Image (cartoon, rainbow, N blue to C red; front, side, top):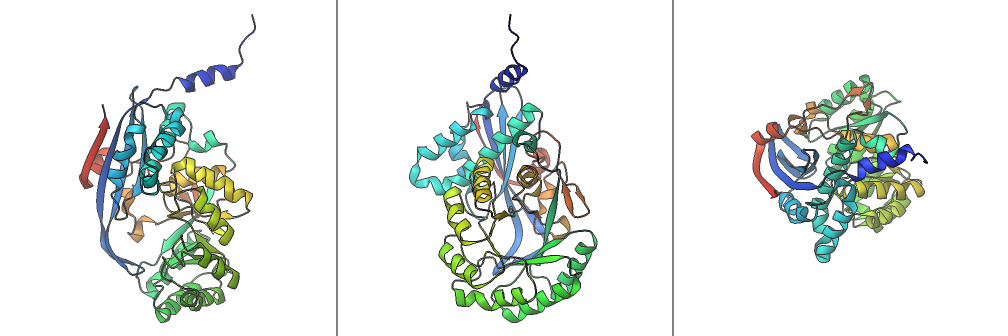
Length: 381
């Protein structure tokens, strides 16, 4: 009798993974220690939507995304019925069903689909007892972290932050600028450059402040003269022609894409800019992020994912195209998601130590999060 290869047993175990019985979603609001300024936007809190899929055997999968003024919880519950009854191994069929149910609303529903896809991948990893990076095939276990500073702080305060971060081993720092006040931005960026060693780089985030090339060029020339290594979000992502025109006029790489929903949008931007800002919580989940990563790898572009460093660190461990992962450190106060987590990111000498825990490195504490909940919903049994 011929012995079956060991792979047959592993495949059988994966195929037997139970189906989703319920999807739970929670909208949480966490106040900032003090108000912050993001471009023209005055911010006092951050809203998150947490998702948990429950499997028939008691297993779970988690996801989290920024609410960003959208009815994200409703979008999750709108697409959740397509995931209930399907195993995490059949996540592609769930996504296809959710996308095709109401084609005109696909762009809106993609944020809900994204969180469900992440939760399915997380459940797959937990059920397989493997981290996401191992499921994808690892290439490294440490990934550089890019901390974010600014948010309306004074030039001296931001410069002090940058000097401290450089001393802690971080090698690239992102600075949030005003974008509409060249005098203020000049003072800020000169202070930043003067506070850091020459071997520590900085980039700027304009946060969609400009509408035309002439609006953008003065600040972009300033950033170029001071040695910025990227300029992020000069225009809205749908203004990819403006992005291409600006990139043709300046040598500093432009970074765009954090709100792009699929590979088609990333294809346009990859033809226009040199750095793509992928966010799995927006662009079709981890499946969509992987599609985009394959695309930009072929096109020889770099990727800096948008926040969620532990989850995107799992992708970075498998895809060398990811130059670093972005992180708003807890002391900055602009992303208090650490108050929802049961496991903090592990940082050493400016690098993220990629987690070996099973799943997609999304370890939030559901009970702790309930203290910040504005609303919760459940779909399924």
